[in-house]
Length: 127
Length: 109
Image 1: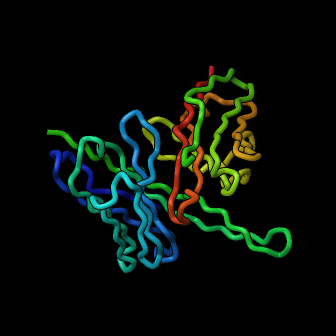
Image 2: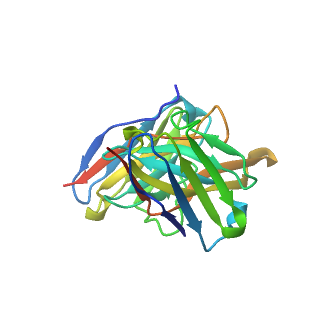
């Protein structure tokens, strides 16, 4: 299970810190991603952090958002700075799975997918 | 292209079959996943690795992928299948990146 928190109303240019608390699985074995959804729009991947702490960001948030994790607390964090109205939306955290299988020729292949999602937390950027 | 393209909307009569497609060059090299999102809810993994159903997903949902096109089929659509459906795949530029299609709104008539 994943539970997000920390959303709210913030003025343009402001900052916010989201949390994602994990339970029911070995948190530090998994990459966790943040995915957001603007009102009435589709899903947008914004960041992933590996079990070892390596982080990737979408270009739309690079330099403004920072993802960290605390494996001891089974928690993920997203620091959002320089927020704009375009950052308004629901923010989900999701567990990434790397699923290996033995295929033709004796080679291992990998499926990647997000199998557990939190219910999301809402950010509204408005003056 | 770094995009995944889906039709914005599909309608299906109750009990009939709906087909949702997702197109993108990256699908030639990466597997496709599908997610269902009901209004006001979080996405749910429906299909992974082009055609695999996680446990608990009804077998009326199936999927396949050929070339640059992936397809999700709902056979015998039910009222509760009315939702948004998103395809998803890795970004070819790095192993940690993800991309989603724009989503298809399925209406069950």
